[in-house]
Structures are given as C-alpha cells and as structure tokens.
Length: 111
Length: 116
Image 1 (cartoon, rainbow over the protein chains, first blue to last red):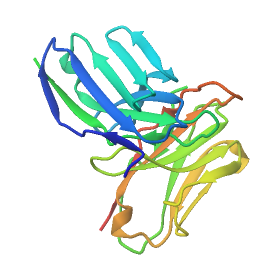
Image 2 (image 1 turned 30 degrees about the vertical axis):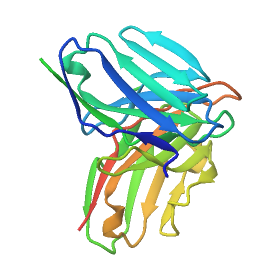
Image 3 (image 1 turned 180 degrees about the horizontal axis):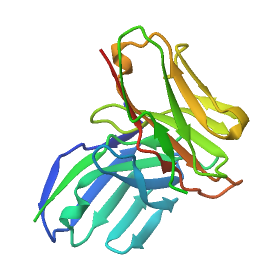
C-alpha cells in the first residue's frame, strides 16, 4: 500500500464548477500537507500548504486537513479553463526532507 | 534569478549508455533535491543535499545512480548503464532551508530521459 493515495482521475467539470480533490495517507507522522499544480511538460509548483489539521484559504482555493481521518482535500471555487492541470497532494513530517507525493489527479475544466 | 534550471530538457540514449543531468538551483538555496516522475505518477524522492553534503538517499537510487553537488552550488545526477526502466522525468528542486518551519521547494522543468 502506498503512503499517499490519490485518485488519478481524470476529472472533467464545466467552467464555474466547484472542484473537490482528495488524498488519504497512512503515516501519522506527516505534519506538512501540500498541494502542487503541474502543467503538462512542466515541473510542479506549490499552490498552498497546511501545517497539521485545519483549513487554509487562498483566493479560490481552500485546503483542508483532517488528521484524525488521515484525509486531505483541496477545493477550487469558480473553476476556470486555466485551472486545467494535474494536482498533486504531497506531505512530509517536520524533521525530514523527503516529501511524499500522491499520483496526481488530472483536472479538465471545460469552457 | 530565473528559477531552477535543468539541462538538458530532453535526452534520448541507448540502453547501456551513461547519462548525466545538470541542475542549477536558485541562488543561495542551500537545499537541493532530485526526484523521478514516471507517466501517471507523482514525483518520487531520490536524494537530498544540504549544501555539498548528500544527507539522504532513497532505496530507488541504485548503485548505477550517483549524484553530486560540488561546492554546494549546481548538482549533477549520473546514471550508468542505463536501462529502459530508467525512462522518466528527472526533476530537481531547491529551497532555502532553515531550522524548523516550512520552506517552499521550487522545481525545475525537468529532464525527460528516454532509453531505447
């Protein structure tokens, strides 16, 4: 079993829809939870991160972490065609430097 | 500063040949990471440098793989006797590390290796 599980999709939604992306994990030592966006043929770029449990909002993006369920989510409001990309969840513990990534979910937002 | 730079962007090599990739991190970033990403998967950690010291290596980094970061600046990743299973995107990332807290790792655009 992988440490981080993420549904690869693809997920196709109409423009303006609310998108929900999720990951589950097994390592209770994880404390930093990150979401990266990766466009085709590009490296990942950090969207946002959360430390421990709770919610964090940044514009149209909201990240949620539920450590009791080992479940994290990213919500995208008012989705735009430019949001079409692969979204990777990632996590690590506080002392280490090794970040564990999910497989990524491919998102298509149709105009 | 234009971000993390990786060269070459693409490399096609015959099985059994050696290849070397270069990563130039963002200036003053003391931490450097190498990841490997195959199609439909997320990046997998390979190795980590703090300055010139290689502090952590994944089990994925077999004896055929070696990474260096002389003088704590650019880094090279060499694969000897390449195999078809080595075909992947090799990503480099760098960050400005400090004790405690979160620091963002910035990724390069990767080197896509195809072994034929």
